[in-house]
Image 1 (cartoon, helix red, strand yellow):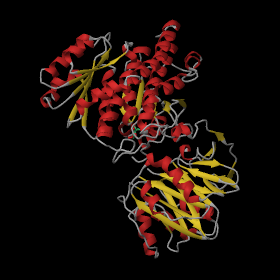
Image 2: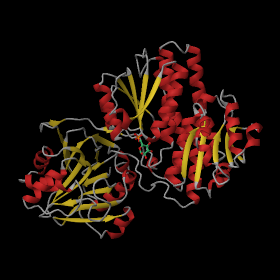
Image 3: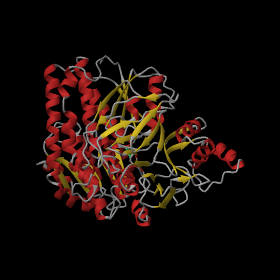
Image 4: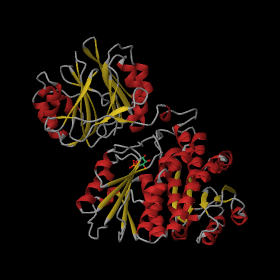
Length: 598
Ligand code: G6P
C-alpha cells in the first residue's frame, strides 16, 4: 500500500509531486521518491524515511514531467534501494507502483537470465524491466504488453526520458486523474489533487492511461479508447489541511459533529423512499469489515436487532472470504471507510459469488468497493488524513443506525412515528458529540490517569461493548500503550487476574441502559482490586461517580445512541495521552490508513 503522484504540465514537477505526496503519506510513509524528465534525461531521487527526508535531499529540479511515490513496505524492507521509483537498465524508463506483483519471483528469474540487472528486493522492480523489454517506441503499448505478464494488483505510473507523457494502469488499487489547463495530474486519491483542481476522472480496473500536459486518453483492456465525463469533487483543498490544529487527528475529531450532520442529510428520504435497500424483507443480515470498521459493524448488529428485529451476524472480512458460507445470509453489508481494504473487497466479491445482495458503506466516492457491490451508502465525513479512524468511524455508526432504521421501517418493526422519533434522536447525537468536544479540557485532565500505565482495560456492556473495543484500539494504535477491550461481564473469566493498582480501567455505564446496574457491579469488582477507574457516564450520575477515581460526563442520551458521544470522548482521551507521550499521532508506527494487501 503506497501513494502515487504524477504530473505533466508547466509547473516545476518536483514541487507538485512533493506537495501531492504529502497528502498521500497516510497511505504509507517508510520511504519516498521522485523521477522526472530533466533536460531530456531522467533524474531520480529516493530516500528511506518520511517525505521530509526526501525533500531535504532534493536538488532544485526544473523538469515539468514526473512521477512520485510514498511507500509502505510489503515486499522488501524499507530502505533507499527498495524505495520507488525504479529505473530500467538503460535508465530511460522509470516506474512507481502500488499493489503486489504475485508472480514476481518467476518473472525475476526469467528477466535476470535475460540479462536484466535488479537493484532491489521488491516485487515492483520486475515491472520496469518488463516494460523495458516491451518498449518499441510506444510507452502505452509497452505497458499494455507488460500487464499481460503480471499477476497481482497494481496502480502503476511510468515516465520515459525526453517525453512529456505519463502512462498509468490500474487493477484493484486506486488511481485518479486531475484535469487542469495545460497540465494534468495523476494520484492515488483526490486529496493529493485538491490544491490544483477539483475536476477528476476515475480510472477503472483494467484501464491504461496516457497523460500529457494537453490531454488525457483512457483505454480499456482491449486497447479501445474510453470516453468518460469528468466528475467534480466538492472537497476543498482546505478540507484536507490541518486547519490550525496540531494534528490531523484532533482536527478530525472536532469535525465529528459536522460529519454526522452531513451523513444524515436526506436521511428521511433515504428511509421513507427506500433510496437504499428498496427491498427490506431480509430474514437475516451479515456485517463484514476490518479494524475500526468492524467495531462499527458490531454496533450495527445491536442496532439491527433493536430497530429491525433481524438476526444479525458479524464476520471479519479476512475470515469471511475463507469461511465455508454454508448458511449464507441474504444481505451482506460491507463497511470500509476507504473502500480500498483488500480483505473487504475480496469479501464483497465472495458475497456476490454466493448470491447475496451486497451493500457497501464507504466514505470515498469512486472507491473500488463501490464497483464491487449492488448498492452503496456513503458516509459524508470528508477526507480523513490521520491514520486512526475518528470522524469516519462516527459516520459509520450513523450509517449503521440508518440502515437498521430503514430495514426496521421497511419490514414493519418500526411504525412511521417510531421511525421519525429514532431519526430525530439520531440527529440530536451530533449536538451531544459537540457537547463532549466543548469539554475536552476535562478529558485532557482525566487522561493523565493513563500516563504511567503499561496496560489499560476498557470495559462496557451491550451496545457499548464494541465502543470500548474501539476505545482500546484507539489508545493502542496512537499511544502504543497496551490496551484491551472487554465485555464487562467477561472480566471475572480471566482478565480480573491481571488487575492491580497499576492498571487503569476505563468503564462506561449509561444511566437508563438496561445493563447499567450490572455495569456498576462490574466496576465495583474492579475497584476492589485497587485498579483506578475512569468512568464515562451521564452528568450528575453520583452512583457511578462514587465508584470512580475520575469521571468523564456526557449529556443524558438514549442508550442505543450513546456510542456516538462515548466514542468521541474515547478518541479525545487517546489523543491527549499520545500527545503527552510525544507519539507520531497522525502516522503511528507500522500502520497505514488504507490496507490494500491481504
Ligand atoms: C486500517 C486503518 C484502520 C481501519 C482499517 C479498515 O487498519 O488503520 O483505521 O479501520 O484499516 O479500513 P477501512 O478503510 O476498510 O475502513
